[in-house]
Length: 287
Ligand code: 2AM
Ligand code: CA
Image (cartoon, rainbow, N blue to C red; front, top):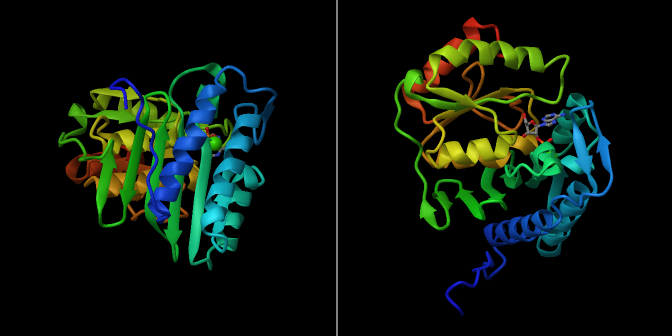
């Protein structure tokens, strides 16, 4: 192989992890190749909630790859579910009895993808008996593959990841979000943003929940919080953060589970507690 030739993310064998990594890499490469050529743009639950043919095509691609290897597994994908909060919760509850449930977001950060802003990702998680055991997030723009297996740590480019070490919010770089629901969720997040801004080193809003979580896991962000997300936005990233030594809870401080929509993920410890307190005092937990 020539030294400048790209090494593809192809794992041999058909373990759950190999299939997830290969599916994320294949979908990610295709998505990136279609940047700026996404065809028709449609909206879902609101004017801010975008979907393209690339989202749907990528989900199909990932579904097919998974079912080729694991035909009896269940799949919950963003583009296979009706838009809206209740629909996604119902879909999750319908799948609650499945032993193996794959949870897919073919493009997390579709708005960025549409605008050509290079911060979007493919997110694939596998839950066994309702608990996430595998999380894979691929960032095509930076060609970074984030992989976590339950109790086996989290890796990027094959190197073990660890969360950052800031202990105080005042030293923290914290990511937040502007959710696609402008009526119910945006005002809650804005209260949190206003309360956090003067207390942190700085805030960032990249526009992909999954990539925020991957970057918390990699120690590049101290934490991330957002109210009103869906299971496919956070399932893989939650395991990445936990396996990197961080902490993932809802905005009340309860441990992460698949139904959590209001998320706080940090490097853990006192910074996590501080962030929860700020959100509570600002009436920005979403509960
Ligand atoms: P998406 O690009 O897959 O839609 C940005 O704040 C985050 O919110 C992104 O991760 C984005 O994911 C997610 N998001 C966008 N629309 C959403 C919706 N209707 N419900 C929940 N999350 C949404
Ligand atoms: Ca999506």
